[in-house]
Length: 53
Image (tube, rainbow, N blue to C red):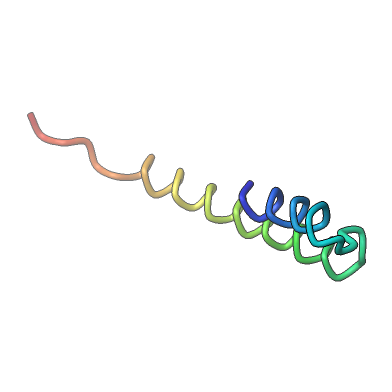
């Protein structure tokens, strides 16, 4: 969520336009990459062997 809030706050304070197509594409790509990372880390944690005890 940091890139999303960073883009929104940068639009508010310096007066940049956040709704340009480049910024929207960048935010979508960040969210997609974050989702891929989340899915792969959950899969790796679920397939890890249980500790012997």
